[in-house]
Length: 127
Image (cartoon, rainbow, N blue to C red; front, side, top):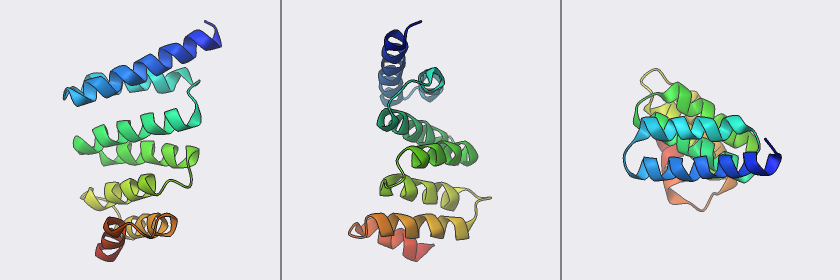
């Protein structure tokens, strides 16, 4: 399959995953996301969005370890994105077996990247 066809497939799989997530079908959405991310040809920003969506779906299902894995991948692709760091902190904080110290570090990083956002300062204070 050519790179153009693979990219088109991956982008359509990502669009389908977003639609399935909106229609409250998380398992099907995750299957599409796995296909899109597995193609390996998405641009960095698009792949980061796909990882964030997968993380949200995993977190909603209380699979926090999987959510953190996707958020770490998104953070590698977009290291200056405060929202990803904030979500990673929430994934540590909301996990009954999570680490509050790691959550606090993630929140501090998020605040450092976007200090003007009050919800991030509040989360850092809570941690």
